[in-house]
View 1 (cartoon, rainbow, N blue to C red):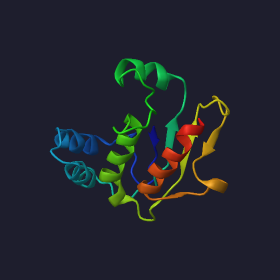
View 2 (view 1 turned 180 degrees about the horizontal axis):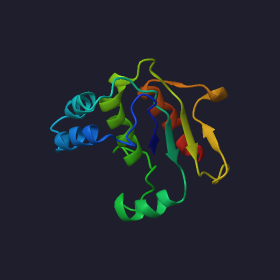
View 3 (view 1 turned 90 degrees about the horizontal axis):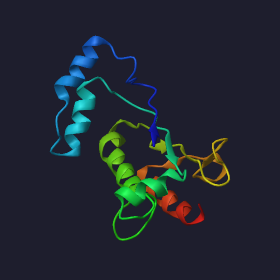
Length: 143
């Protein structure tokens, strides 16, 4: 999964920003702590772009880390991708001014490593993370 932010670059970091980030590195008690640390480090707004990996590596990795299931397996327990999307929502939604999230998948049987596909029809944007999760769950059975 990849995230892009046009208003806050993690690389290259200035020395002062790097020190600020180091001071804020700790195990957060709540996702709010992460959001506050990002704000203290200088993040004011972001334009998120989400990319989700649908390569076969999700099956191989899931065999070792997700009860022998693909990392995209949906069921009663949120899969790692659903968990990551939820964490992004809890930590970054505050900074996303328009709530529009372009969301793409790659590495599936049709795109391989040559192209991406949009989650939303006509290459539109998802309206918030709830819609990202909804489209993700809609797409999974067809991958």
